[in-house]
Amino acid sequence: VPRRPDCDPCGKGIFSFLEKGEESLATSLCGRDAVQIIPATTTLNLEELETRLEKSGEVSRNEYLLQVRLEENELTLFPDGRAIVKGTNDPSRARSLYAKYVGG
Image (cartoon, rainbow, N blue to C red; front, side, top):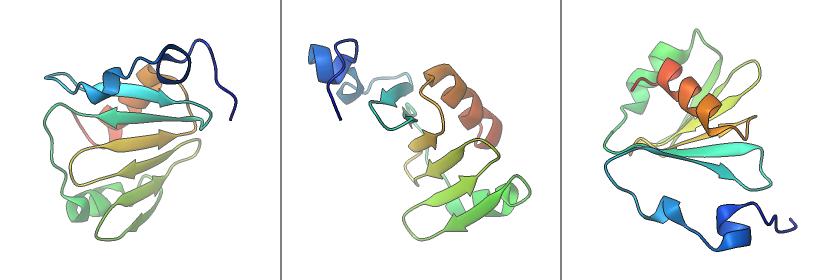
């Protein structure tokens, strides 16, 4: 993947996502059509989420993660609250999907 000068980590060497603070972070993953969300403080019960999200899309779960395939996006959720939202590069859209399907 070629480096983009406007990409904070790739082009500018700024790694703000490593400085996790009290606010959640949403960072576009360069060249992947995905956004990573790191909530400030959250843990997820993947078993409960699986049951709740089955009516929203195709769901698959193992001991490490839960994936939900929606119409235009895919959410990969981890027990520590992190998520990868595929199908968008827009952090605001990713946060909105996280809030809608996970909460917070």
